[in-house]
Image (tube, rainbow, N blue to C red; front, side, top):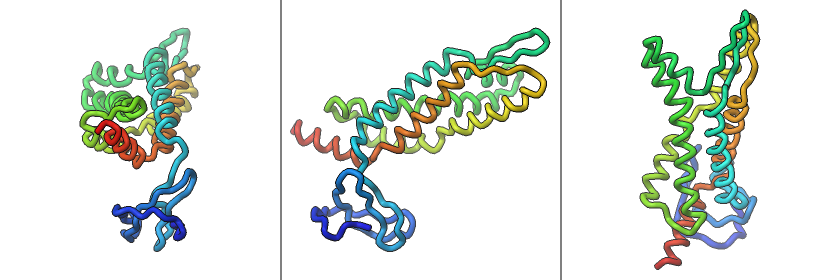
Length: 213
């Protein structure tokens, strides 16, 4: 629950996302969690070194994403024939076969959306790290929060696992470096979003503007 002995009330309020109970937003120490006094839902928490850790995970995800597109994803061997596939090959194959709608969907959710989600994080966090407020901060923040639920790379990984199990029944399938990189990229992206306290973005931006004024 909110610490009743903690001083530092502000004129900002937050409604609980579960029961709509209104609470004053209070400054927390590292590791403290604010919970709804009505239903106990977590309202917000103060994460340790949120901006730097999120930036580190986002940069790691970006490098891993590049590696995931440079090397083979899976390699198939059957009756003496070998074929390797990269991350983008699945979408292009749908285009070749005339299923352009599926090709667009595969390329969108396996390549473009994850890439834009990582770039949106970097565009917000890198300038703040070096003491600059990003241009169009509100627009970029909305874009980042909009893209977050659409970056379903973990679903793509589940599809690859299912394909691997099915194809292993009649062919030898080996995992390429790209699959490992893609898997680690998904973990790094998830961790970046977990450790990032969105309130820190606005707090840091306000501090920077205060020093520049």
